[in-house]
Image: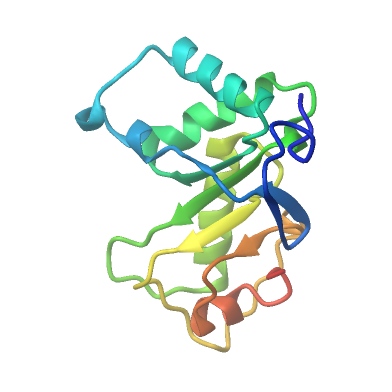
Length: 160
């Protein structure tokens, strides 16, 4: 796969442990058939074309977008060449505890078929008590963006 710093002279930025292109490939359109459909093979070929051209950061995974990104990432000889950003949504009133946060992160990892979550964006209404502390070793490179104070405290030690 292509090095994002050498292809098309893409402008990059450092985001925690990652060097990523400033332009990310958005995947929200893949979240629902309401936005249109395409065969998964075609979607994965287009993702591969983006990576070959240096666009190695993929964002806003919802629903089936996480699954398609995970399947695509598994096809890469070096899956770490791509960065996947996803969201953690809590749709019902929930007491956010260590177990709830860990389960949300594990579910994202399973859906994206990777041993860590590169970047996690909690939805704005996701709140956790400041006393919650979470340490999930598989997420050592996980970024939390933006980092609301309550959720940031809940993931203490894992925010880059």
